[in-house]
Amino acid sequence: MAQDPSSTATDTAGKIRIAEVSASPLDVMAHIDAVGDPAAGAEVTFRGVVRDHDHGRGVTALEYDSHPSAGDVLRGIAAEVAADDNVIALAVSHRVGELKIGDVALVVTVSAAHRKQALDQASRLVEEVKARLPIWKRQVFADGTDEWVNCP
Image (tube, rainbow, N blue to C red; front, top):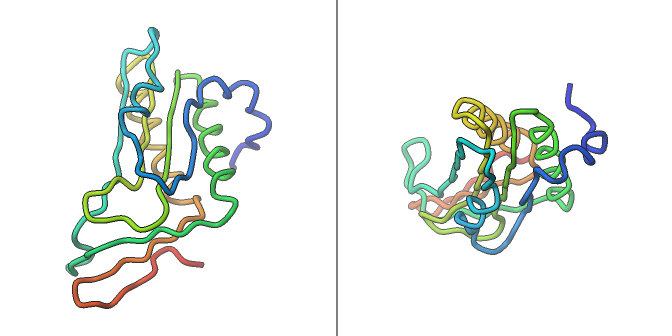
């Protein structure tokens, strides 16, 4: 069962350095810099990048559209992960709008005292964002057709 984000807000606010949905290109280095801490022995960064294919079909572009609640949902997910005692700090952003091949669509960075803790919590954050964030993807294929993914 998901934790109520409001119950962890006071405990986790200082750990969440970035949590936003943005129409602007994502600054990966800003995410990395944001989670730096003298207590951190590990920092893990994940970049979700627009690729040129999907299920054997060539992809030429992507468009992400979001529900107005997406920013609040992302901050809630971040608070749940930040509530883990092993997390020192985290930064997470998802891009919306039109993206080209090679553009960064998702950035997750987590710092922790040890490697496994940082890896585990970064993976958890990516999976929760993919499962719960109300953002939908429109893929444009090389043959001119398109498809919406993760639409309700």
